[in-house]
Every structure is written in C-alpha cells, then in structure tokens.
Image (tube, rainbow over all chains, first blue to last red; front, top):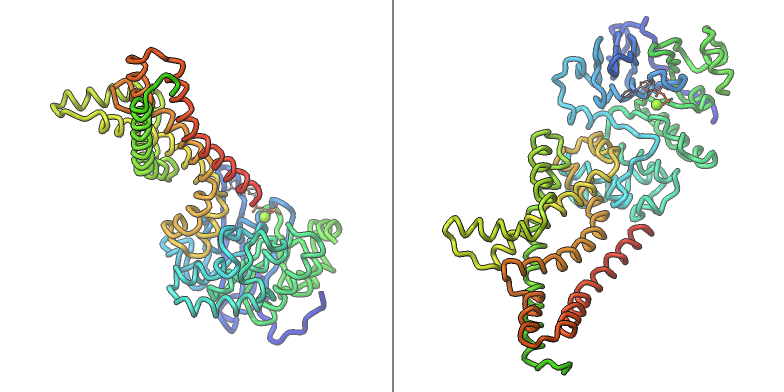
Length: 265
Length: 214
Ligand SMILES: Nc1ncnc2c1ncn2[C@@H]1O[C@H](COP(=O)(O)OP(=O)(O)OP(=O)(O)O)[C@@H](O)[C@H]1O
Ligand SMILES: [Mg+2]
C-alpha cells in the first residue's frame, strides 16, 4: 500500500481531544465504555472518538476486545457501563432503535456472511428493498452502482459460491454500501482470505477511505493500518493501550505495543 | 390371473387408491401442523418451545396404530359417528405433523447463526430475516428428508387397517379371506406399495445428491 496524502486530517482517536473543539461532532464517541461477558471483563473503560470522514484502525492481540468494541458500535453487543454515542444516538441509554442505527452503521465480517441463495445483486439490494422500500428499477441501478464501486459490475448475477473469497468479501462491502451508511465497521475482513486475494479487498477499502467514508476497522495488516488509517488504536487487555497516527507503529511508546509490532510485522 | 379374478385385482387397486388419498391427507395435514410446530420448536420463546415439545414427545411416544384407535374411538365417544377416513386422516396428521415439525426445526437451526446476524446488521426485521434469509435456505436443506419422510407416511398408512379403513392393506386382507392365497395376495400388495414408494426414495436421494453438490 502506498502512503496517502490526504486533505484535512481529522482528530486522532485520542480522548484528550475534547469533542467541543473538533470541527464536527464525532460520529462515534466511547467514554469509559465497559463490557462484561459474565464474570469476564472484556472492555474495561474504552475512550475513543471517530470523526466524520475518519478512518480508525483497531489493532491488538487476540482476545483484547477489538471485535467486542466494534460490535458495540452497531448494537450487536450492549454496553454495560460508560457512554457510547453513535451517529447522535446514546447506545448506553438502552432506548435506541437498533434498526434505525443499523441503517447508519454498516458492518463487514471476516466470514463475509453473504446470503448463499441470492445473487450478488439480490444480496446487495435485499435490505434497501425491504427496509427502505425502494422500487425494482431503483434497486437495479443501486446494485450496479455499488457493485461497480467494488469492481464487480460484471458479477451482479453470480451466486456467492461462484465467486472467489475476495470477490465475496467485496460483494459484502457493496451490500453495506447499498444502505448508504454514515459509518462502516470492518472486522478482520481479509483474515479469511489467501494472501493473493487480500490486496483486492484492501484496495476497495482504501478507495472508500479516500472517498471520505468514515470507517472503523479491526485489522492485522499493519502496513495497511499505517498507510490508510488516520488513527491507529492499540488495544490491550480491554483497554486502549496506545493510540495515535500511523507513525506510532514505528515508534511504540509502550512495551506491549513494541512487542506486538515486533511480532506483527 | 395368478388365481385371482380381474375384479379381485381391481379391488386391490381401489384399496391402493385410498392408500394414496390417506397419504396425501397425512402429508397436507402434517405440513399444516408441522410448519407451526417447526417455528415454535425453533423460536426464541421458551413457552412456545415447551408446548410444541410436549406435542412432539407425546405423538412420538405413542405407536401410530394406538393413535389411530384413540382418535377413532375418542371421537366416537364424543357422539360423532366418524368415518374411518376422517379418524385415519386426523391420526396421520398428528403423526406426520410431529415428525415433519422436528425435521424442519432441524433444517431451520441448520442455517448458520451468522445469517441471522447478517440480516440483523442490515436492519431487517425479525420476520423479514426469517422469510427472506433463513426460510429459503432451510427449505433447500429440507427437501431430501421431507421427500424421504413421505415414504414413511405412505407405508404407515397401512396401520389404518386397525380401524378398518379401506386401504391397500385392508383390501388385501379381504381378498385373502375369500381366496386363501395369502402369498399371492400380499405379494401383489407389497409390489404396489413398493411401486408407490420406490420412485419417492429415488427422488429423495437425487435431491440429496444435488444438495451436496450445490
Ligand atoms: N459472546 C461472547 N460470550 C463470552 N465471551 C466472549 C463473547 N465474545 C467474546 N468473548 C470473549 O471476550 C474476549 C474478547 O473477545 P474479542 O472477540 O472482542 O477479541 P478480539 O480482540 O476481537 O480477538 P481476535 O483477534 O481473536 O478476534 C475474549 O476473551 C473472548 O473469548
Ligand atoms: Mg475479533
């Protein structure tokens, strides 16, 4: 991946930068967010901001709580303490309409989770047709638009099983895009792919980033995190251990990040 | 022919016709009962799961001929003079509904949980998720075992002989009583049952293979 030169660098994901001073209110705002699974404390007070247009990469060891943090953002997991505000909705209040939230927040999983009985076009348009009630013609145009965005305009009529892993993952990204979300979450979306297929998926994500899409992505691709993300957040034992711009990976401040980067690169 | 008259053979085929009628009743009734049972068995609601579970356990724990008796005499005690067809149809409905419900529950649960989650993340309602995401995949999985179970339905209609329902088994018994050629008569009955069931078994295994290929 090449290093991107980008216009206004949004606020880094540091909790020291109060949201009042940033030009736009953050789309995602974690304040001392806690999450337990039974007796296991998985998130132990997370502070994190994601400004509109910002790309934040979450990195960290297995079990450090990256997926859990991401899943809290679209309400797949309920937070147990602290405040989590996403697209202006206070998720910690417990009164948020999750279906409305999910029209604003897309998510892409490691295992694609495409609908195997539907073509790429039908996968992409199911939610817009059923949730947003768009018409048939509009749906076809929408599918053509988002599939072109991920470079799969010619695969509209293919079923998932007829596509490579990389292509399936790009359809999954297109499926999220079709809802015109304000924010997309990516959870290790290239981890299940053969090395030669990860590039095509990362390129799509990079293009989205350049287009101004707000994104939170959990990734093991350090070079990608460094070059594409505006902010990198290193999680360790359920906490934000270290965060900053991509260069932080070259100059870790903590022993834990140094060890992690040492193993990871 | 084979020591039987044309009339006697025609009588056997008339019995076979009623076997098919009862099988269809069992399948249609079983589907009408089995669908809600499958939904209840796989639902989030504990109560629905428990209630439908009781129905399934009770029906599966009683031999089909006994169900036939209970339904037949049970309704008669209520003061209704039920034709054996109605009683046999109700009994087959209970029997097929319980088994199909369990088969289809398994098919619904066989669709990965991540498919529900994917639908949820796209803001689909739980009904939309079920109808557009889960059900089509469950149906695909359900075809082979369902067709396979049809064979069980056809064969098990023969238990309706206990309430003197006029089916293939019953007609064979009648012809045997007047001809005393049990081997010939029941071999013909067996061949007719086989001729009905074998194509369905073939179909089931063809679907099975297609499912594993796709
Ligand atoms: N639904 C759950 N129930 C119980 N424990 C869970 C659940 N989900 C996650 N955990 C536990 O929470 C901890 C953090 O999990 P999480 O998936 O957030 O980690 P992660 O940083 O994404 O790790 P990985 O890199 O392996 O994906 C782990 O110990 C995990 O076992
Ligand atoms: Mg994870």
